[in-house]
Image (cartoon, rainbow, N blue to C red):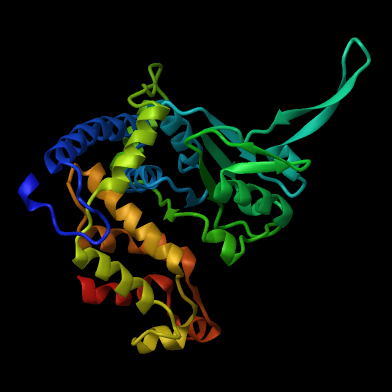
Length: 342
């Protein structure tokens, strides 16, 4: 696409020079291609997971990764931290994990003169890329503390607010098999994640390459491609992308069609307990822009919206008992929602 093909948009004033914007997008697209290649050298057979995670980071959001153990979810976070130049930390969520174990706490110290004062000791949440492993094993109180930090980008300890580093992203994981001793995330807290990404098993060829590469004497190491400042600049650039009216209307139609009280689809009215809220529209708008930037395109299309519909809507909708009795799935419902846009 050249500068003369920039679509009219309700979301962008286009006061800036379109040629300059195009040049910035092309430059960022080239660097993001290096990022994708760098991550793919370490993570085998999960290109869609890598791309969706990068889209989420470019959009400034958080990711919920759903998959069985051993699918390189932890390795993905470590690799992204290295390639993007972000400080990363990991917490293992357990039922006895307390909010202070994540946020930090104040300790009473006494100086040589005998004067006592409190000093704040920051917890692991003070990182740029935080992995919360098996988040559904943490108690609701601990989940709430972490999710408040995700929403507000700051923590409150003993009545004092402490800002988190920028950028700040959480990549949380859930094991879909083990449900005993877990505390499923409430719907309002699931909405804090921009995407829910399902991590499947790699194909045979990818698993073969992974087996050989990870058991040899010379294993690949991730190299930094971007820095934290570069990622922040990329996130600002994503928000400057023009979005055509057709894409804006398509996002609104898609999201509003998924609400049972206002949908014209019988399947939605009959089988959906509650649908996506306005945050879903915001997430689709940002993620569609980020996906376009990742591909080096000047503006998003309806294809971007369709490709991102499931990971963005799936955790923002719930089926009722009638749907379970009829064998209806959320994937099938979302496919029906997307049909008018295809």
